[in-house]
Image 1: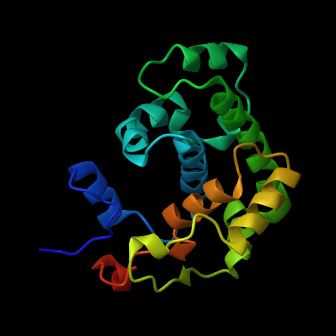
Image 2: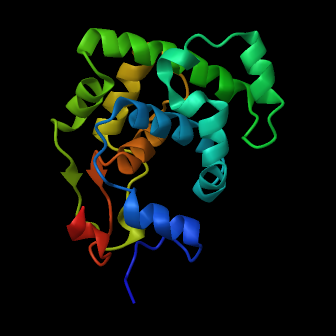
Length: 186
């Protein structure tokens, strides 16, 4: 039996996410935007709920295409607020549209969001060596710096805790515990 990080639990959805995605370095801008959006929607909720609704989010938000979302209108907001298959939070929906606009600006400035976001870890994943889940921080210096810069650029729902969760999901940090089989693989 494979040993996994303690937060995974026993549901197939969480196991698959842990075993195939969490902590794997992401360099695709659309995928980075997806994680940024999903981590914002997860605030105050649990990750499994977000994963259950992920395919609905992809459909509702046009596969997380920032340029398309940046053009959303009040009609799109109304459509999203009436879509029971996603998490219907007006502030998080508005933040997603706003963040898509800022994301596009970052792409223009840096050539890609990937180039911009990976600078916070020096261009390569940070590999932590935590023995147990309780050692994992909720935020780090790098997450705080990322949060401050994103906020300065006009992003919303990007506090240091959300930024650190994003960093973990998108593989900017490898926080698989030392006894987890994925620790060495990632």
